Structure formats: C-alpha cells, structure tokens
Amino acid sequence: MTVTIYHNPACGTSRNTLAMIRQSGTEPAVVEYLKTPPSRERLVELVKGLGISVRALLREKGTPYKELGLDDPKWSDDELIDQMLAHPILINRPIVVTPKGTRLCRPSEAVIDLLDNPIGRFVKEDGEVVEAR
Image 1 (cartoon, one colour):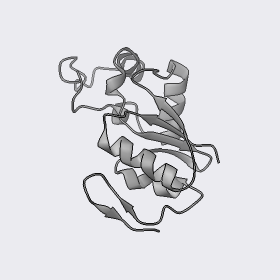
Image 2 (cartoon, one colour):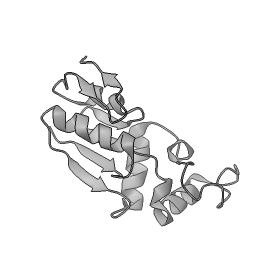
Image 3 (cartoon, rainbow, N blue to C red):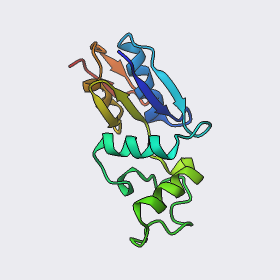
C-alpha cells in the first residue's frame, strides 16, 4: 500500500499520525510540507480528495492567518491557495493519502480507516490510548 503523509515534525498530531502509520507496518512517503510545499496543482488535488473547501484546510493557530486577514470572506479559493503556497504553515496537517482515500487526520486516529493493517493498541504522546479497531 502506498501511503503519503504531509507532515510537520513539530506537530504532535502529525507525529502521532506518522507513528500509527508505521505501527501498522507501512513506511509512508513523508513530505515535510514546510520544507517542500506542494505545487498549486497538488494542493488543489488534495483539497478535492479531502472533499472540503479550501477555507476548511486553512490552519489558524500559530500561523499568519489573522495578520493576513484571511478570516475575511472576500478571499477567493484561488487567493487562499496563493496564501497557502506563500505561507505553507497555513496548510492544516497532517494530510494522509492512501488508495483508500485522502484525509486530514485531526485527530490522529482518523488515519486508522485509511490503513490496510490494524495498529493494535497505540499510546499517543500525551498518554491518550487508542484501542485497536
């Protein structure tokens, strides 16, 4: 199974998601999107695969969202994508792509349904236990 994770190693949710993928026996392609942002075309494909609006993919916390005035509904999807490409930290994470679908894995256990193999019992960094499904 081919799995790709758009990952930020500074994000606990992203680290937990990556660990769950690996615990399932899969080594994913890891795209550190802050270092290697997706192309415009790829970002549009991800939004489409997620089945959400461009605005829904914007991350507010710890980003220049407010400073850029992105809460204003005047911004078109194309303009919001321009902002995400200029400031990749605005892209919410982690995004996981598998043959079973594309998902924004918040919370991290949202990845479980995308994996072929069960993860068994998993303990998140904060101590929360995720039981096998």
